Length: 253
Image (cartoon, rainbow, N blue to C red; front, side):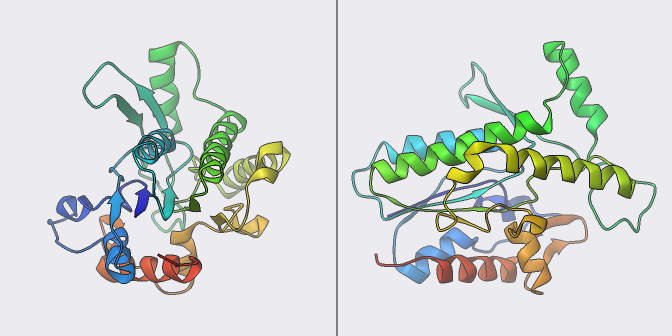
């Protein structure tokens, strides 16, 4: 048995919401199930953050005595999850993309003002700092690593998307923000506890010798979007994601 966690880039229902029209194809966890002839429990849901991913994976781990692998494709660290009194238990605040003046800009820009105003309206406090965001996510990664080690479960994590959403159109501001994020990651003692053989591409930033998977595949010419208005991977890209993960795993199921 393989337990898989992630966001829309892993959710088996995502093709039904593809833009500009619904599609039907198998996502990488289902392809991995066929490749390994192993049952895969895919817990991924579109739009969720890492706290929910962690919660769903740990809850599923507690239900089983025999688990061959846990595989998690973490989403953007900047997403914020909140538990509520509702049948679904959680809601996620997702940074939303901003229309930029320079249409040739080679990076996504997210709307910080929207996030900050939401926090001010809800909590009378500003949106978390890079230090806080990085610390929370490191705690999630390390906790899952420890849980799997304690139960002798093989774990493979990787960063699916760019970990820290960029809020700046201008190069200087964007570079300073990324520099601060990387510095906070390096300074945090938990970053040294994450095992590179457990977390593919750690520490997630190219500048630090790591990568996030979508960028890695893009640079290798192995990633294509569903469409110009839908950044999710198409069917061929999901086959490439599965091949990459399969190659990295010590499959002995």
